Picture 1 (cartoon, rainbow, N blue to C red):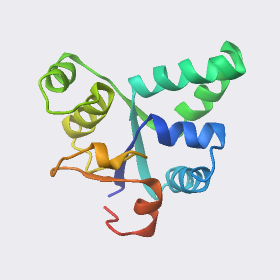
Picture 2: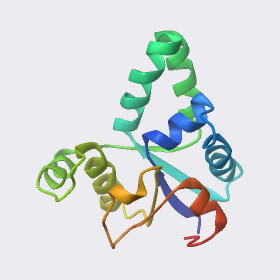
Picture 3: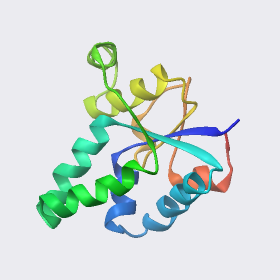
Picture 4: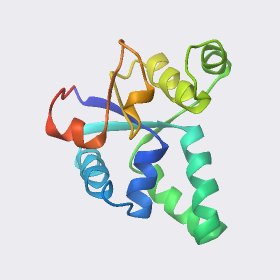
Length: 140
């Protein structure tokens, strides 16, 4: 059974924008997905967030081209009414983080990879940076 990993906006942007020093761990994580060692997931919200940032730098068409390539590398999960309601009624200070967390949780994903793991004070999902996940500290 493939290991299931949810990736958030920062990890995707690290990969697509080559943001150092975070690019290498993000690229390695996506390599694991591309070679079938893990199954990567994200939310539709991540695509919206990433497009918003990329289009300012690259323009609409280049941003869409990159996102089409990205779409081949991971499964895109819906953010539905239940997810929004859970996020609105949660203890999270950051609404986007809450949406990501509840999207992962409601889809039974055991790991959420982010750059801001300190913002996720949860016990039912493992939250790690890409580097932490790759180091195997908790390789679920």
